Image (cartoon, rainbow, N blue to C red; front, side, top):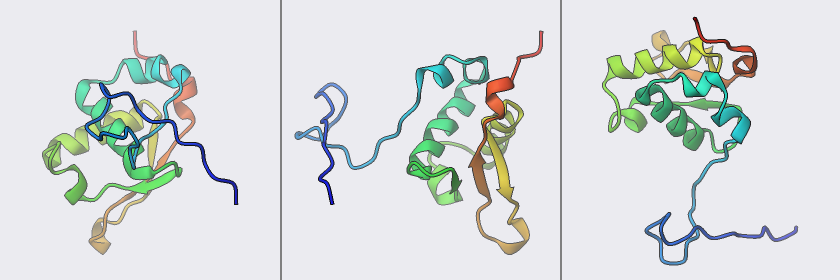
Amino acid sequence: MAKRKVTPFGQWETTIASGNEAMYFRMGKTQFTHPACTSLNHAAFRLLMLAKFEAKGQREFALPYSVYKGFFSKGGFQKAVKELCDNGIIEVAEHNKNRRIPNIYRFSEAWKTFRPPP
C-alpha cells in the first residue's frame, strides 16, 4: 500500500504543533462560490461545514443530536437542514424518527442547478 503524503496545516490554521490535523474536509471553489452556498444564512453554512466533517468524505452521513447540540438548538438545526435541502446541497436519505436513531443525509448534486429566488 502506498503511503499517503501528508501536507501539514500552517500554524495560523491549527493548534496542533506538527500541523497534522486528524480531520479536515474538502470544498471546491465552484461549490463555495455557487449561489446555492453564497445564499445560505450563517447557521446553514455552519451546518454544511459540520456535515462535511461528519461525512468524512462519504456521500451519506448521520448527524446525531450529540454532534450538533453544541452548535444549534433542535429548532435551529431543523431550519438549517431545510435550507440546505431547499438549496439542493443535501437531501434526507432516511427518515428515522420512529426508529429513534439519527436521520441519514446524503450530499446532492441538485445545488448545481439551484437559482435563488429574485
